[in-house]
Length: 253
Ligand SMILES: Nc1ncnc2c1ncn2[C@@H]1O[C@H](COP(=O)(O)OP(=O)(O)OP(=O)(O)O)[C@@H](O)[C@H]1O
Ligand SMILES: [Mg+2]
Image (tube, rainbow, N blue to C red):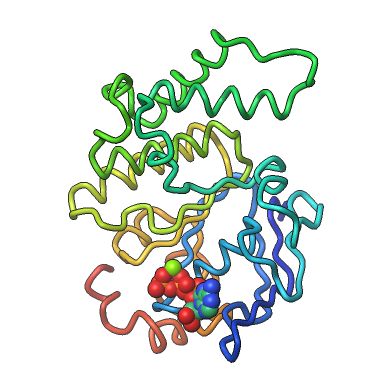
């Protein structure tokens, strides 16, 4: 298969804990992958290593064949790996439209020629496109500090999209949400993925969501890759059932 992101032998130790133990995984362009595993399995560490928040002890992180392991977070973002930070809180007084316009401007200014400023009307137009994709038009003029929890999370994702990522990493996008809001959130994420066409990787604990949404699933445990495959393959994988899913999966099958 063609590969957008290729992780090879990724290692990270915290004292006696091996949080990433020789992780080797590929992600195809345009794929939608869930990363699952018990608490402490190394899922967030995996994302932190890819985005440069943590430096790996060893291993390669190849984005379109270029090893970005150990590079700075800002360089990794510029090269096309995005993640949703809790950024909405950084611009509490900005409205949704202002925050997105600022993000588009900053990004385009950094990536285009230093001599030509990116015009404001174009940034505003792009911000409106992203708002439409994220379903945030209805709160375009709301200051971000007044947004609901769900809309703040959507704004975080929208701000990540403003940086035009090739790969977008979402760590538990539905955390802290009630059952109904969860589904709205994940359906919105799925729509974004379909319309933008980026490679999307998300960490999720809700197995109903994982098995309904993901094209492929990667299971981590004790920092190691326990299994990878399609939802059907993972559902029937004996190691995964024994180590993680147990009988809870039969209920959601
Ligand atoms: N900065 C850190 N310093 C020390 N230990 C850490 C650090 N970050 C993670 N760990 C340890 O590494 C292991 C993996 O943690 P990680 O947060 O990646 O797990 P996770 O799969 O995201 O778990 P959860 O599902 O609870 O979010 C755990 O044992 C954790 O305690
Ligand atoms: Mg985590």
